[in-house]
Amino acid sequence: MNIENAQKQVDDWINTHGVRYFNELTNMAQLTEEVGEVARIIARRYGEQSEKESDKNKDLGEELADVLFVVLCLANQIGIDLQDAFEKKLDIKTKRDHERHHNNQKLK
Picture 1: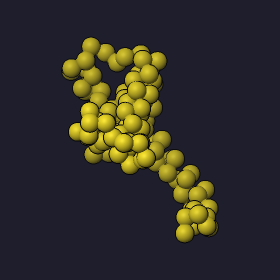
Picture 2: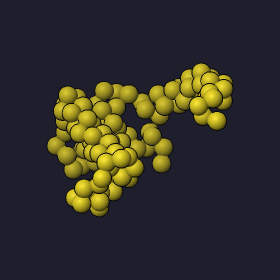
Picture 3: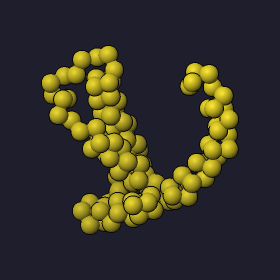
Picture 4: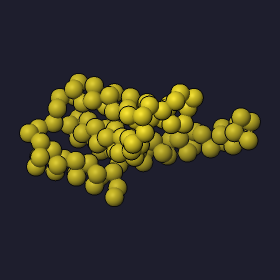
């Protein structure tokens, strides 16, 4: 699946199962909440904090998918073609960062 198809799937889901998109501010708050859930799992599972029993069965992939879903909602309702934006960003990063990363002593 590409990003364009994912945006279409989310739009179809909203139009079939939802009443409408939440407004942009609500979706931004929702995105922040979902990113926080991802951060909590990573901090406790891979960081130095101990993992709470209630977090041990949480699926990181599912939480990342929640983040992606809300990002796709925001892009749809604002009218952003994320496929095009991602391809442009990848081109910029490739041109800008290739030598920088290869020359970074911290990465060797």
